[in-house]
Amino acid sequence: MVRAFSLLEVLVVLGVFVVVAGFSLFMGIDTIERGIAMQECDTLVSMLVSARTAGLANINERPHGVRIDATHFTRFEGTTFNSFTATHKAVARNPAVTISGPTLPVDIIFSQLAATTTGYSTITVSEAPASYAIDINSMGQIEW
Image (cartoon, rainbow, N blue to C red; front, side, top):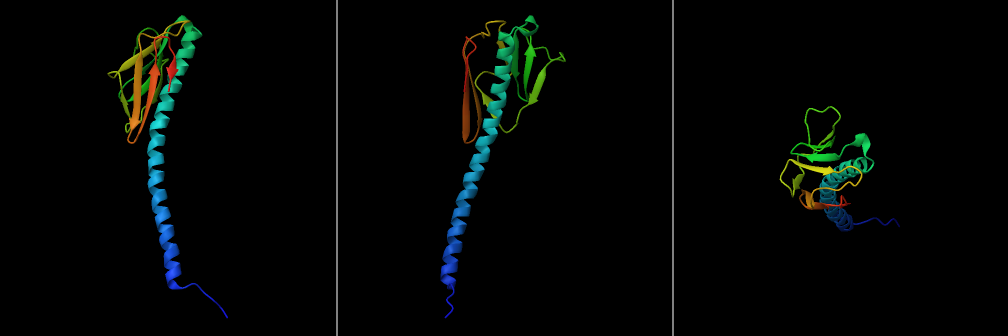
């Protein structure tokens, strides 16, 4: 005797699959949104660490810094940002991600040999629902 699944059993299994798939879709979208903000945070931290390291190493015997503006993160040399210098390393920002904390544009400059900065700053990188804080103290320590 051959036994098969009834229509009701098949519909129940399909219903369970639809519920699991729907839940997975919402979780996946949330993960993607968090990933976008995290990627922007990682890019900014990488540029800050690079500028701090260059300041500690006294490369070209100048301070090094990062400018954060509405469209780019820019790593530069010197005590002030000069937009006409060709040695800058600029990375385009993701327009969907919000940067808050200090008023933009902001320059974070690490001194020669000591890599100290002027004051304490907290930069928040966010795109709903994710938010990440980057703290930079006057000793040049970067925490995220």
